[in-house]
Image (cartoon, rainbow, N blue to C red; front, side):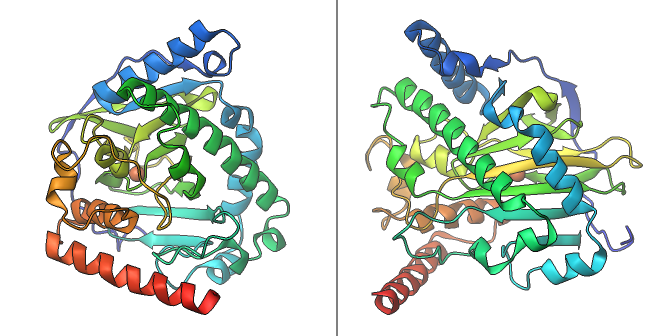
Length: 346
Ligand SMILES: [Fe+2]
């Protein structure tokens, strides 16, 4: 692996500032005291509406951090041949990916996608079920750890989304059905020491919320066009932030967080766990407001129940090469594939 093929040039064009934040205590969320639960919900809603991200301390994921980190270390230490064997041929298949440079950055990543609930056809958008790769043959016990991490993530994300629902003035179950059918996609990242320092370019995520867990500095969140802030809660907390589908679902009241990974010392590596939550093809998406009040729905004539459309919109913004016609075309293509699968599967 060498740095010479790395062509990313969007580097050092923002000023990095220190951000102050009050970490939110997860104990409040699971307390029997209704006042403490209300305090958790208010703090989450304030942080998401004011800046699109929150740091939550002492979550069940943080308790698991040593075992998750052990999996990451073992995965990244696998031999090159094993990594090659696990490297998927197609985009977003799980196993090892992005070993080398790609359009977003450069990292060594072990990905694990939690299966869709029983009875739901496989997600046809881009993902493959983890059964296709026998992870435990190479990393004993890893599936159990990743399954548990996915469960804990689901619990934390559901509680954060309930806090947001209450803040919006909706019933706290507003996002529950969506969560039930959403994917949990865990990535164990290792960014090798390499120039340039910007290891992952500025971008939004595409689901409902994303979680980052890391002991090492590198995650930076957008403050405005010229300023990014470094956030490193360490092993004691998670950063959880708004992704594109949450902005659309809340009619823009919560804005997608743009973020990047920047490591000032080119000789330093970074390890992180990042977990995407939400928005599979079959996840019913709630919408705050209606066509008259939600600008995203006004813009999209075919929106009814279309989660693939939301994903497409996210991709649209991310790569800035689609227009609304191509999104509608994309959605119709996905629908045909879904119908085909359902017909085959009965
Ligand atoms: Fe991201």
